[in-house]
Length: 352
Image 1 (cartoon, rainbow, N blue to C red):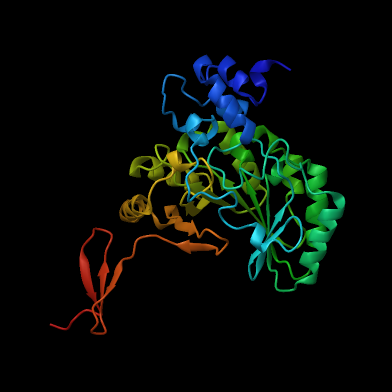
Image 2 (cartoon, rainbow, N blue to C red):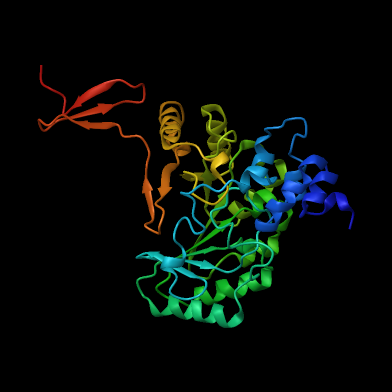
């Protein structure tokens, strides 16, 4: 295979392709020894080599800052392990579970909250025995209404393997919804073939696809076509975006992304506050920044373009909304409500 179309997986390859300098190589080798590296051709071509703060490179090209581990950072920042009754299952919320089919991704994000659990040296996928136990767990708990396929990225699996899992889920009567979390339509859009799209459906279940995308430039023509193949097959799409410093933490960039998603039949779902994953402090904003951005979106953009701003509480306590509040109690049975222009009103209105 021509080297120009290979996924870049080592600091040496990054240097050869102009994504890092030879002076950076020793430090990046140290980063890559701990955290997986993969930059697909689709993303490599998006990176502006002349921009030292290119928002695509910041997401995928390793940085020496990843060796800076802060005391508050955690190997398992959202507490998956504390809610894993059997291998491959995370059962944090009453009516839904995560089914982690693989620990492999098409591309490795530098801010990933599972960065200690994915990539080379980790188990590639659930064994047949572990998958059977995970499916038995789902069958045995009739409160499970939704199964979320995650990992790693479930769409790196072959169509055959994915189809087999979806067929098993199709036989579980109390499971009504299957959700697939993926980066593949963005990172490796040509992988979204008609065969893979057919394999993504479970008989008798509503199948949703949540696409991870953080910057409008990621929505290339090829990515839009991949998303369209999924949408045309009848699967609703949602988006997940991580708020990242110098990537999407301005009203212009975030607003452009949300509009582009809606234009491509993807409903903005979550804007995640950055998790306390090791070596990611250079990419995190503060919550006040996110709240200000959400106020701006509320004031300018259609309701279709509004994601929920959420924080995964460290320790496994789940997501909580952390967006701005527009209500202030007066203590007299009334509320002060702020409108999208920032003006404040009494509710119920006082009679004149």
